[in-house]
Length: 393
Image (tube, rainbow, N blue to C red; front, side, top):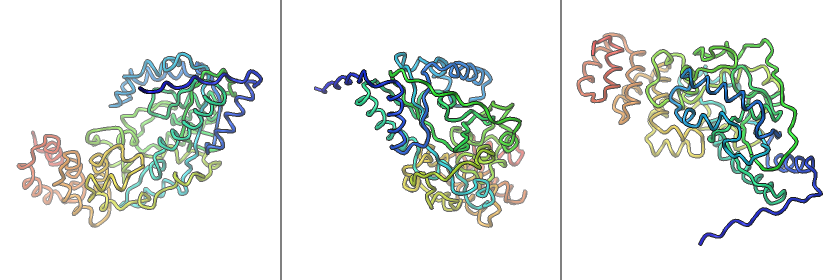
């Protein structure tokens, strides 16, 4: 038989709400979090965020992220996750990069990965520490707790703003006066009735640097994102071939896009992540595209073990690599793309066709199409051959 969890100890009635909050804050900072704040579980900002989400879904701007739509009601109503929750402890972990992400875009024969993906998976780091914090709140303060990190239907950025950690900028991400656009977020819901912090106000002013920096014009208006045009969404969440209109704009980005974050003027106050696990791994700092194109599934798992990249799988990454090779000026790109025409994944083969169309002359491409099209069984790959050659289906 499984032993029942012992009941939580009764809280010390002599400990004030302020003392409880201070104890939680001190514990969170001791665990390595860089920012801590408190918000009511039913903060008004969450209701407004829910309304924006419903409009986002109504316009179809979530693309293929069906999980957003499936759990929309839970995100829309603040107490749907856990009606008994009274307060939320919001924590932030600084992942400020050591180098300018824009510099990576100049190395066309190498892959550019989003800054957050070059170190250990933040889900694991934040969740592990939140569990320790949750145990502290449960055992020392006698409260029930639940923790959430990114994957649950929690409106983390509006919560973070309500807790005073920052504000949702025009790029829809959180901006902090102390950490710029480089904060990972996590939340701990509790039955404690803690005094909330003062919500942060918007400090974007008339600046629109993030909107202008987007290579695919993914922002229909300030504070609005159309994920279907966002390179971060397309290179990570999107499962199929990358729409033709956005392939050239991807450049050498093979996982995510930091442009709107990296351009933010508030980053001048940011600092390098103090957590060594979040520092870029040497093998993930501008990896050679040709080397990545040679990865089989086992090698992919080995190279990206413990990182966020592992979640998209080998085929989706090599889809992005094939596009980057198509945009590359490297002399060996065409040879590497030719080899990818024999890849087991139709997703990779399809993007290799597009990549080769960028390197070969029309006559060379026509000869290759003639040799390959007849033996290709996948319709998406066939469509790429025909589209690049303007051959009717």
